[in-house]
Amino acid sequence: MIQAWIADASGVRAADAEEAIARAKDGSAHAWLDLEDENYDTVCRVLAPLDIHPLVLEDMVMESNRPKLDDYGPYLYLVMHSARWEEARPAIREIDILLGPNFIVTYHDVATRSVTAARDVLQRRPELLQKSTSHLLHFMLDVLVDNYLPIVDRLGEEVDELEEAIFREEPAGAQEQIVRLKRGMAALRRIVGPERDTLLAITRDEFRAIPPDMRPYLRDVYDRLARISDLLDSFRDEIATLLELHVALASNQLNNVIKRLTVIATIGLPLTVVTSYYGMNFRLGVYEWKHGELYVLGVLVATALVTWGVLRWKRWS
Image (cartoon, rainbow, N blue to C red; front, side, top):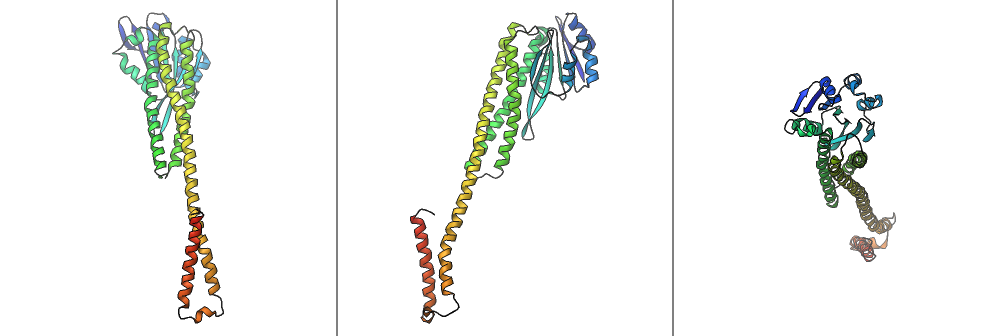
Protein backbone atom coordinates (compact mmCIF):
# COMPACT_ATOMS: atom_id res chain seq x y z
CA MET A 1 0.00 0.00 0.00
CA ILE A 2 1.32 3.42 -1.00
CA GLN A 3 -0.05 6.65 0.42
CA ALA A 4 1.17 10.20 -0.17
CA TRP A 5 0.42 13.65 1.18
CA ILE A 6 1.35 17.14 -0.01
CA ALA A 7 1.64 20.16 2.28
CA ASP A 8 1.83 23.73 0.99
CA ALA A 9 0.52 27.13 2.02
CA SER A 10 -3.07 26.04 1.37
CA GLY A 11 -2.88 23.05 3.73
CA VAL A 12 -2.38 19.30 3.52
CA ARG A 13 -4.06 16.99 1.04
CA ALA A 14 -3.68 13.40 -0.12
CA ALA A 15 -2.10 12.87 -3.53
CA ASP A 16 -0.57 10.15 -5.65
CA ALA A 17 3.11 9.28 -5.29
CA GLU A 18 4.16 10.79 -8.62
CA GLU A 19 2.63 14.18 -7.87
CA ALA A 20 4.03 14.24 -4.33
CA ILE A 21 7.56 13.50 -5.53
CA ALA A 22 7.31 16.06 -8.32
CA ARG A 23 6.17 18.81 -5.95
CA ALA A 24 8.94 17.90 -3.51
CA LYS A 25 11.60 18.00 -6.22
CA ASP A 26 10.61 21.44 -7.52
CA GLY A 27 10.44 22.76 -3.95
CA SER A 28 6.84 23.97 -4.18
CA ALA A 29 5.62 21.74 -1.34
CA HIS A 30 6.62 19.24 1.30
CA ALA A 31 5.66 15.63 0.61
CA TRP A 32 5.26 12.49 2.69
CA LEU A 33 5.19 9.02 1.11
CA ASP A 34 4.25 6.03 3.23
CA LEU A 35 4.99 2.58 1.80
CA GLU A 36 3.66 -0.48 3.61
CA ASP A 37 4.71 -4.02 2.68
CA GLU A 38 5.82 -3.21 -0.86
CA ASN A 39 8.32 -5.32 -2.80
CA TYR A 40 11.74 -4.19 -3.95
CA ASP A 41 10.74 -3.51 -7.56
CA THR A 42 7.82 -1.29 -6.53
CA VAL A 43 9.97 0.68 -4.10
CA CYS A 44 12.62 1.26 -6.78
CA ARG A 45 10.03 2.37 -9.30
CA VAL A 46 8.23 4.77 -6.96
CA LEU A 47 11.38 6.36 -5.52
CA ALA A 48 13.38 6.47 -8.76
CA PRO A 49 12.85 10.26 -9.27
CA LEU A 50 14.46 10.94 -5.87
CA ASP A 51 17.77 9.29 -6.90
CA ILE A 52 17.97 7.13 -3.78
CA HIS A 53 21.11 5.02 -3.45
CA PRO A 54 20.57 1.34 -4.41
CA LEU A 55 21.94 0.15 -1.07
CA VAL A 56 19.34 2.24 0.74
CA LEU A 57 16.53 0.79 -1.37
CA GLU A 58 17.78 -2.71 -0.63
CA ASP A 59 18.05 -2.05 3.11
CA MET A 60 14.57 -0.58 3.22
CA VAL A 61 12.97 -3.76 1.90
CA MET A 62 15.21 -6.12 3.88
CA GLU A 63 15.24 -5.97 7.65
CA SER A 64 18.60 -4.76 8.92
CA ASN A 65 17.58 -5.47 12.54
CA ARG A 66 19.71 -2.62 13.83
CA PRO A 67 18.93 1.09 14.22
CA LYS A 68 21.28 3.33 12.28
CA LEU A 69 21.70 6.73 10.63
CA ASP A 70 23.39 7.25 7.25
CA ASP A 71 24.01 10.67 5.74
CA TYR A 72 23.79 10.68 1.94
CA GLY A 73 24.04 14.45 1.59
CA PRO A 74 20.69 15.44 0.05
CA TYR A 75 18.84 13.06 2.39
CA LEU A 76 19.21 10.99 5.55
CA TYR A 77 18.49 7.30 5.87
CA LEU A 78 17.20 6.45 9.33
CA VAL A 79 16.32 3.00 10.69
CA MET A 80 14.25 2.90 13.88
CA HIS A 81 12.18 0.26 15.63
CA SER A 82 8.81 0.41 17.30
CA ALA A 83 7.71 -2.06 19.97
CA ARG A 84 4.52 -3.39 21.46
CA TRP A 85 3.66 -6.09 24.00
CA GLU A 86 2.44 -9.28 22.32
CA GLU A 87 2.03 -12.77 23.77
CA ALA A 88 3.80 -11.97 27.04
CA ARG A 89 6.88 -10.50 25.33
CA PRO A 90 7.80 -7.36 23.35
CA ALA A 91 7.42 -7.49 19.55
CA ILE A 92 9.85 -5.36 17.53
CA ARG A 93 8.88 -3.69 14.22
CA GLU A 94 11.34 -1.94 11.90
CA ILE A 95 10.62 1.48 10.37
CA ASP A 96 12.81 2.85 7.58
CA ILE A 97 12.77 6.63 7.03
CA LEU A 98 14.20 8.77 4.25
CA LEU A 99 14.38 12.43 5.18
CA GLY A 100 15.12 15.23 2.77
CA PRO A 101 14.54 19.00 2.98
CA ASN A 102 11.25 18.68 1.07
CA PHE A 103 10.27 15.01 1.41
CA ILE A 104 9.98 12.24 3.96
CA VAL A 105 9.51 8.59 3.04
CA THR A 106 8.51 5.88 5.53
CA TYR A 107 8.63 2.16 4.85
CA HIS A 108 7.37 -0.64 7.11
CA ASP A 109 6.21 -4.22 6.66
CA VAL A 110 3.18 -3.97 8.95
CA ALA A 111 1.15 -1.12 10.40
CA THR A 112 2.96 0.74 13.17
CA ARG A 113 1.40 3.02 15.74
CA SER A 114 3.77 5.94 15.21
CA VAL A 115 3.06 6.14 11.48
CA THR A 116 -0.66 5.56 12.03
CA ALA A 117 -0.76 8.34 14.62
CA ALA A 118 1.00 10.72 12.20
CA ARG A 119 -1.53 9.91 9.46
CA ASP A 120 -4.46 10.46 11.83
CA VAL A 121 -3.19 13.78 13.17
CA LEU A 122 -1.91 15.25 9.92
CA GLN A 123 -5.26 16.65 8.81
CA ARG A 124 -5.81 18.31 12.20
CA ARG A 125 -2.23 19.58 12.44
CA PRO A 126 -1.06 20.38 8.90
CA GLU A 127 1.81 22.44 10.27
CA LEU A 128 3.64 19.18 11.03
CA LEU A 129 4.38 18.85 7.33
CA GLN A 130 3.96 22.48 6.30
CA LYS A 131 6.82 23.80 8.44
CA SER A 132 9.36 21.14 7.50
CA THR A 133 9.67 17.41 7.09
CA SER A 134 11.74 17.27 10.27
CA HIS A 135 8.67 18.36 12.27
CA LEU A 136 6.83 15.26 11.06
CA LEU A 137 9.91 13.15 11.81
CA HIS A 138 9.98 14.51 15.36
CA PHE A 139 6.31 13.68 15.85
CA MET A 140 6.77 10.06 14.73
CA LEU A 141 9.89 9.59 16.86
CA ASP A 142 8.10 11.14 19.82
CA VAL A 143 5.18 8.70 19.52
CA LEU A 144 7.56 5.80 18.90
CA VAL A 145 9.49 6.48 22.11
CA ASP A 146 6.28 7.06 24.09
CA ASN A 147 5.11 3.58 23.09
CA TYR A 148 8.13 2.11 24.88
CA LEU A 149 6.94 3.45 28.24
CA PRO A 150 3.99 1.02 28.75
CA ILE A 151 6.32 -1.88 27.92
CA VAL A 152 8.88 -0.71 30.46
CA ASP A 153 6.12 -0.29 33.06
CA ARG A 154 4.87 -3.80 32.29
CA LEU A 155 8.37 -5.21 32.71
CA GLY A 156 8.73 -3.41 36.04
CA GLU A 157 5.43 -4.85 37.28
CA GLU A 158 6.39 -8.38 36.26
CA VAL A 159 9.76 -8.07 37.98
CA ASP A 160 8.03 -6.93 41.20
CA GLU A 161 5.48 -9.76 40.99
CA LEU A 162 8.22 -12.32 40.47
CA GLU A 163 10.15 -10.98 43.43
CA GLU A 164 7.09 -11.22 45.70
CA ALA A 165 6.29 -14.74 44.46
CA ILE A 166 9.84 -15.93 45.14
CA PHE A 167 9.85 -14.50 48.67
CA ARG A 168 6.42 -16.04 49.32
CA GLU A 169 8.04 -19.38 48.46
CA GLU A 170 5.75 -19.80 45.46
CA PRO A 171 8.42 -20.34 42.80
CA ALA A 172 6.27 -22.56 40.54
CA GLY A 173 7.19 -21.60 37.00
CA ALA A 174 9.34 -18.72 38.25
CA GLN A 175 12.42 -19.87 36.39
CA GLU A 176 10.55 -19.97 33.06
CA GLN A 177 9.12 -16.49 33.68
CA ILE A 178 12.54 -15.12 34.59
CA VAL A 179 14.12 -16.55 31.44
CA ARG A 180 11.25 -15.21 29.30
CA LEU A 181 11.60 -11.73 30.79
CA LYS A 182 15.35 -11.88 30.36
CA ARG A 183 15.03 -12.71 26.67
CA GLY A 184 12.42 -10.02 26.05
CA MET A 185 14.51 -7.46 27.88
CA ALA A 186 17.61 -8.45 25.92
CA ALA A 187 15.70 -7.97 22.66
CA LEU A 188 14.62 -4.49 23.78
CA ARG A 189 18.11 -3.53 24.90
CA ARG A 190 19.58 -4.58 21.55
CA ILE A 191 17.24 -2.05 19.92
CA VAL A 192 17.03 0.77 22.46
CA GLY A 193 20.79 1.13 22.86
CA PRO A 194 21.57 1.77 19.17
CA GLU A 195 18.43 3.90 18.85
CA ARG A 196 19.70 6.12 21.64
CA ASP A 197 23.02 6.55 19.82
CA THR A 198 21.18 7.27 16.58
CA LEU A 199 19.05 9.98 18.16
CA LEU A 200 22.12 11.46 19.80
CA ALA A 201 23.81 11.71 16.39
CA ILE A 202 20.78 13.54 14.99
CA THR A 203 20.87 16.09 17.79
CA ARG A 204 24.62 16.74 17.53
CA ASP A 205 25.58 16.58 13.87
CA GLU A 206 24.55 19.18 11.35
CA PHE A 207 22.41 17.68 8.64
CA ARG A 208 20.90 19.53 5.75
CA ALA A 209 17.48 17.95 6.27
CA ILE A 210 17.26 18.93 9.97
CA PRO A 211 17.22 22.64 10.78
CA PRO A 212 18.98 23.79 13.96
CA ASP A 213 15.74 24.84 15.65
CA MET A 214 14.54 21.19 15.63
CA ARG A 215 17.50 19.83 17.58
CA PRO A 216 16.19 20.78 21.06
CA TYR A 217 12.96 18.88 20.32
CA LEU A 218 14.86 15.84 19.11
CA ARG A 219 17.12 16.12 22.17
CA ASP A 220 14.02 15.87 24.36
CA VAL A 221 13.10 12.61 22.60
CA TYR A 222 16.65 11.40 23.15
CA ASP A 223 16.46 12.20 26.88
CA ARG A 224 13.34 10.07 27.28
CA LEU A 225 14.86 7.22 25.31
CA ALA A 226 18.01 7.44 27.46
CA ARG A 227 15.84 7.15 30.58
CA ILE A 228 14.15 4.07 29.10
CA SER A 229 17.58 2.59 28.37
CA ASP A 230 18.67 3.21 31.97
CA LEU A 231 15.51 1.52 33.27
CA LEU A 232 16.15 -1.51 31.07
CA ASP A 233 19.69 -1.73 32.42
CA SER A 234 18.32 -1.58 35.95
CA PHE A 235 15.73 -4.28 35.18
CA ARG A 236 18.46 -6.46 33.67
CA ASP A 237 20.39 -6.32 36.94
CA GLU A 238 17.23 -7.07 38.93
CA ILE A 239 16.40 -10.05 36.70
CA ALA A 240 19.92 -11.43 37.15
CA THR A 241 19.58 -10.99 40.92
CA LEU A 242 16.16 -12.69 40.90
CA LEU A 243 17.57 -15.64 38.97
CA GLU A 244 20.41 -16.01 41.46
CA LEU A 245 17.95 -15.65 44.34
CA HIS A 246 15.65 -18.27 42.84
CA VAL A 247 18.54 -20.72 42.47
CA ALA A 248 19.70 -19.98 46.03
CA LEU A 249 16.21 -20.53 47.48
CA ALA A 250 15.79 -23.76 45.53
CA SER A 251 19.19 -24.94 46.78
CA ASN A 252 18.30 -23.95 50.34
CA GLN A 253 15.00 -25.82 50.10
CA LEU A 254 16.83 -28.90 48.83
CA ASN A 255 19.32 -28.61 51.70
CA ASN A 256 16.46 -28.47 54.21
CA VAL A 257 14.89 -31.59 52.72
CA ILE A 258 18.21 -33.44 52.82
CA LYS A 259 18.72 -32.25 56.41
CA ARG A 260 15.35 -33.64 57.50
CA LEU A 261 16.01 -36.94 55.77
CA THR A 262 19.43 -37.11 57.38
CA VAL A 263 17.91 -36.53 60.83
CA ILE A 264 15.37 -39.29 60.24
CA ALA A 265 18.07 -41.66 59.05
CA THR A 266 20.31 -40.77 62.00
CA ILE A 267 17.52 -41.45 64.49
CA GLY A 268 16.66 -44.71 62.75
CA LEU A 269 20.23 -46.02 62.65
CA PRO A 270 20.55 -46.82 66.42
CA LEU A 271 17.08 -48.35 66.32
CA THR A 272 18.24 -50.66 63.56
CA VAL A 273 21.19 -51.75 65.72
CA VAL A 274 18.95 -52.45 68.73
CA THR A 275 16.34 -54.36 66.76
CA SER A 276 19.07 -56.32 64.98
CA TYR A 277 20.59 -57.28 68.33
CA TYR A 278 17.33 -58.43 69.87
CA GLY A 279 16.23 -60.10 66.66
CA MET A 280 19.10 -62.61 66.51
CA ASN A 281 18.20 -66.28 65.93
CA PHE A 282 19.10 -67.48 69.44
CA ARG A 283 17.37 -66.83 72.75
CA LEU A 284 18.45 -64.06 75.06
CA GLY A 285 17.82 -63.81 78.74
CA VAL A 286 15.55 -60.85 78.31
CA TYR A 287 12.97 -63.01 76.56
CA GLU A 288 12.51 -64.96 79.80
CA TRP A 289 11.43 -61.79 81.62
CA LYS A 290 7.76 -61.20 82.21
CA HIS A 291 7.87 -57.82 80.48
CA GLY A 292 10.84 -58.43 78.20
CA GLU A 293 9.15 -57.04 75.10
CA LEU A 294 8.25 -53.84 76.91
CA TYR A 295 11.87 -53.55 77.98
CA VAL A 296 13.02 -53.75 74.35
CA LEU A 297 10.45 -51.18 73.29
CA GLY A 298 11.66 -48.93 76.09
CA VAL A 299 15.23 -49.29 74.89
CA LEU A 300 14.10 -48.31 71.37
CA VAL A 301 12.25 -45.25 72.63
CA ALA A 302 15.12 -44.21 74.88
CA THR A 303 17.65 -44.64 72.07
CA ALA A 304 15.54 -42.50 69.72
CA LEU A 305 15.12 -39.79 72.38
CA VAL A 306 18.81 -39.75 73.23
CA THR A 307 19.74 -39.51 69.54
CA TRP A 308 17.24 -36.68 69.01
CA GLY A 309 18.57 -34.90 72.11
CA VAL A 310 22.15 -35.15 70.87
CA LEU A 311 21.13 -33.76 67.46
CA ARG A 312 19.30 -30.87 69.12
CA TRP A 313 22.25 -30.20 71.43
CA LYS A 314 24.62 -30.11 68.45
CA ARG A 315 22.05 -27.93 66.59
CA TRP A 316 22.07 -30.31 63.66
CA SER A 317 18.27 -30.45 63.47
